[in-house]
Figure 1: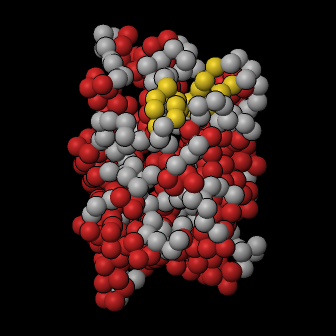
Figure 2: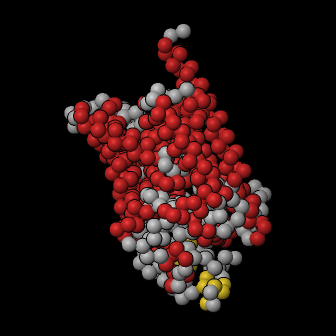
Length: 458
């Protein structure tokens, strides 16, 4: 048997093993998929899907979720995440529209072949399960497949399984994969595009088809969750430009992103007269009986910016407190940049230089997101939720670099112990988050979460 056929056989076994791993992840998401709308985040998406699927309307005025309720002695609309359009005098969900189109399209297709779905009361459980599992769950399972397959190229089967469980499963990516949200979908798309472009290996050869598909994924990520989608689209484009050095590849990457971006622009412009995301439209959340005119809880917190940035990383809900395995990911990024700089990034075009360009871009992208949410976003830590969910977009990438560090140094007993210890802590908190990702950290009764209150910091 030739070495080529041996390599092909190994690759095929790795593919099959990774596919089975992803199917088990999908079963896990099936079991733990949420069936109710305890979160305003989820309720807003459900309201938008119900309106679009049942009445072909993007606005919510005629739906069952559009009503006033009594809160704290005053009347407010039931939905917090709702905005008012002064152009047509209708109310809309504040969530990005393309994911709503995907979810509503799935519901409409199922109803066209005989399905009947209710979106209120006990009838909500089944359609919410289908939307979450078949869209969010499948996207997350695809990320687990790709992650496991790459890990399997560097580690033995059992080691790769364990590394993926700890480094990807030990993050909020797992915690939110059973709930209807945009963060994990965007994070999965970003990770898939990263692997398609060969950035994990530092490769300089990218086929046109892979570049176009990667562009499509990044276009979708941008319209699903603009922060990680936009930031890492730039990072990935610069990698192609500076390392692959192919204008054709850059062009195909850009063209691939056009369909989802065009869909977003068409919907946004037809409704709002601008292509800006709803969150960037001034005054859309200010109207009579709006929750945002009299917010409560974390939406009223005012935390000094000089320490807020650090609290998003190291506090009760901090990135590296709940997922300490990601500290190894940061080390992996820094090491790749260091090794590439020593070789001379601008002169070399080999894989080591490519890995350095990829790592440098990711560090800049992650740093940009941390700066934006720390110094420009609200100081609410994402509201009533588990951990700092706004960083989910780059958690799988950091998890991958943690596996890289482990794979390079797995002969070092001390490093193995550190990886397993940090991974076990990370997985514990990720699984606690699965139970109720929309519970305010201070109210989460689990002893392991309550023990972190000493790190609250404000």
